[in-house]
Image: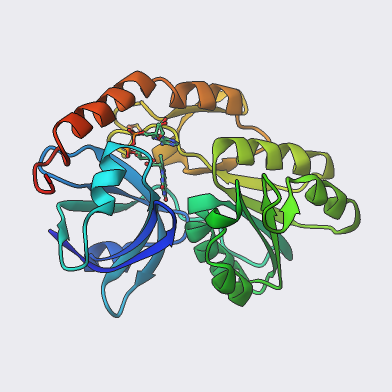
Length: 281
Ligand SMILES: Cc1cc2nc3c(=O)[nH]c(=O)nc-3n(C[C@H](O)[C@H](O)[C@H](O)COP(=O)(O)OP(=O)(O)OC[C@H]3O[C@@H](n4cnc5c(N)ncnc54)[C@H](O)[C@@H]3O)c2cc1C
Ligand code: FES
């Protein structure tokens, strides 16, 4: 069992958990992910590592309550326990001195992005961070971003905070040169940023989040097409070259379980709470 040490609400329905898991923390690196299981019969959900503390033996992850499992997880409080935290999985990010790096994070993925921004800053890079979300409520960890970055930009879809949309980035790239771009966030954001950086030849690394089951290369559910080749999101990634990813295929594959996911939420609602039975109200 994995006790929750700290719980922070980063934004509406977005929680950050720090969990005691010394064996996981000892091997964790930026860019890797965990498979979290809540409840004896709970489903396995992949969540990206956004911090680890070797001294205290803890690992942190942030999650958006989008469906049944993440909503159940969000009800847990410090001192309660999570049944299983497996990891670290996937490959660590490449961290070295690239020069000028543009780090782009969208909504909940701002949290793990900042772990990379911090590591890239410590490796001697000039770091520019762009925090993006649909509106101001989902712009989070701004002070932390300022601490790890030389410059911070904010963009919202509705213009309620910072720049409206990504047009400003198109203008920025006309005058400022970057040696690398890292993007973590919704698939559509990764697709759009990759399209913006491509004409400038800026190597762009995206973190793909296909549906996963085992997270260890056995089930094949997380197939993605990159540069015309079929790869597995879990063992070949989760980071890939954004200029080579078939984003449209990924968007379609992410929607394949939509009817089942909706049914699961409705059934949980009818049962009055958590499918593991612990949080029934
Ligand atoms: C490698 C990896 C890392 C991830 N890291 C994070 C993270 O750090 N924080 C976080 O909040 N989420 C992350 N995700 C997505 C997260 O795993 C899903 O949101 C979660 O499994 C949803 O479970 P649920 O039962 O609550 O919702 P479900 O009922 O399964 O789904 C609810 C809604 O979320 C969408 N959804 C489900 N799975 C995914 C997915 N893999 N990607 C995008 N949308 C999805 C569904 O299409 C549906 O609209 C990651 C996914 C992967 C593969
Ligand atoms: S999640 Fe099963 S092979 Fe990747």
